Length: 63
Image (cartoon, rainbow, N blue to C red):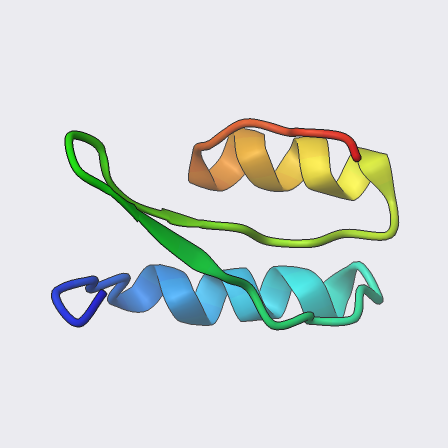
């Protein structure tokens, strides 16, 4: 996903993890022919995942 540019949001995302005492886990991306790419952010705390999705966009998927 070389064309991905999160700009200042990347720093804000990292700060979010630090403030919530979350471990930043390596995310993964998957290319979809008609949907672009996906980034997956992992959280230990469901509330943090919900807050992150609300702040930065996206959806929460529980495994």
